[in-house]
Length: 276
Image 1 (cartoon, helix red, strand yellow):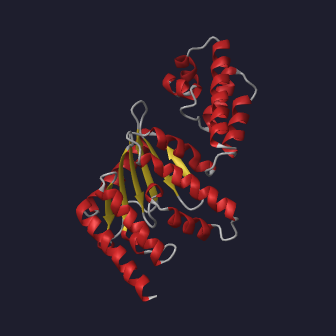
Image 2 (image 1 turned 45 degrees about the vertical axis):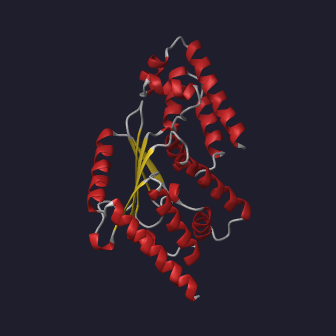
Image 3 (image 1 turned 180 degrees about the vertical axis):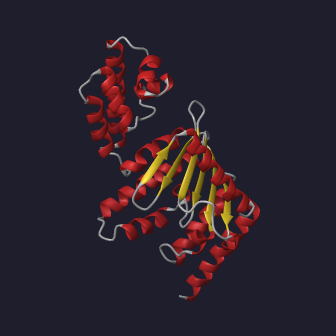
C-alpha cells in the first residue's frame, strides 16, 4: 500500500470512529474516559494524526459496541505498515515528538544511518532477502531520517557506545561514510551526539532505549531487542528509563570529545580502506 493510500485508510478509520462516537452520543472526552486515554488522543485518532494501539482499538469496540470493527481495521492497516508490528507505533510517535533521546549499544541509531549502512544491516539480518524487500526497508529508514531536515525537527539527542564506531558494518568504506555522516550532523547542530567509551565500563542500560516527549501528551519510552520492541507509557517505568538515560549521559564523553573520537574512528577505517 502506497503512503498516500495508507494515510487515506487511516483517515477513514478516524472518520468512522468519529461517526460511531457521535452516533453513540459521546464526546471525545467521554469516549476517552471509557478507553483510558485522553479526549485529545481520541481527537488525534479521528484526525489520523496518531494511530491507536491494538488494546485501545479493542476498548473502542467495547465502548461503542461495534463488534470488533476497529480492531479488524487496525490489524489490516498495521499489517500493511512498512515497519515491524512492534515498531509501527513508535515510528508514528517519532513524527509527533518534540524531543527524542536515543541510546544504541552496538549500531548507529536509525535516524543517523546512511542508506549503505542500513542496507548492510538489513542484509546481515535477512541474508535471503529479495532486492525489493531490501529497497523497501532502506527507503522506509531513509524517509524516517527526513525529520532531522525539517525546520520543525525535534530536539534530538543520541548516545552511542564506542562499539558502534568500531564495528565495520558494510566494510570499512561504508563504515567510514556512516561515521562521517554522523559527524556532519553533529557539526551542523542537528543532533547532540555523545559516545560512551569502552573505558566507561558497564553501561547503565544494555538494550537500545528511546525516550520521546510531546507537547500534548505524556512522555513515552521505547525499548528494543533483535526480535521485539516495547512501547512503555507507565509513568513509573518511563521515570526509570529516564534515570538510566541520565546515567548513560553522565558516563559518556562530552559532545566535543565524542566528535573527536568519531572522526578518529572514521580515519582508522579510512586507513584500512587504503591498505586493502
